[in-house]
Length: 296
Image (tube, rainbow, N blue to C red; front, side):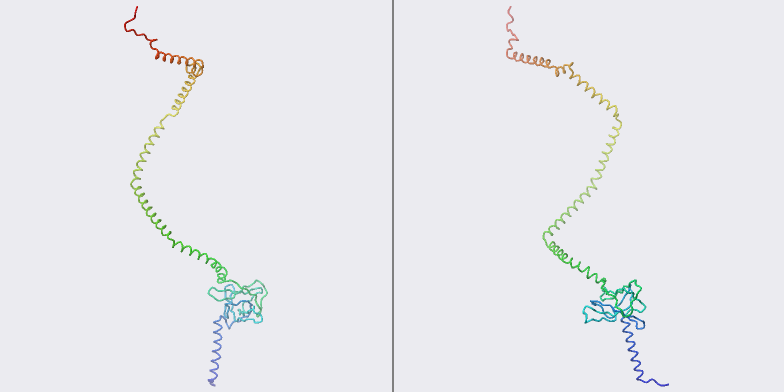
């Protein structure tokens, strides 16, 4: 048996090392050198963040990697990406490949398959687009809103600073503290009132309630029908008396209704007054007094 020369051993070792290095590098890139892969292409105008070994996903599952990013110097708006996709995946025509910004940085390719029954063949160019991942949504939606809020927040901070530095605020806080002490004192006084005066008040109310119950009991014993009948009878009597007084047959009625009777009575009063005045003025006409007796 021939011995293997030292040169052959060195050469074989070198070739195996190169092969292992190739396999290892491709493994680190996410490629499997032992699987049959197909290469497709996509054209974009901005490949920021894309690099060889960027992953290719479909429905969240990795199906390949980006193997190359080349710039088309003849058409400055064209950047060609080489996509190595697992050979077991058949890509329907009408599918689109989107660049998606990842949350932790970097860009991946999201392969969105159509329902077409015709398929791309290796070497075809897949339609491309730019999809906004979570990072893109933050940049395009949230950041403008945050930028719009910054001036408002700055104005609010300025207003709060002015308010805090205003001496009137300190005075107001002192007044609030004083009011708080007064309220606390009032609460203590009310508490004392409830504990000391409230029992006596409740006792007085109970006595008053008892008296009201007695009054109610007495009122319940009153014969309201008989009482109302008596009141009605009294009213009827008063009405009859009033009718008799104003009747033409009574003296009061004649005085009120008979004009001649009124004038006669008035004349009598007038004559009586004249007689009294005359008696006062000339008493000797009516009264004769003899000191020595009456002469015959």
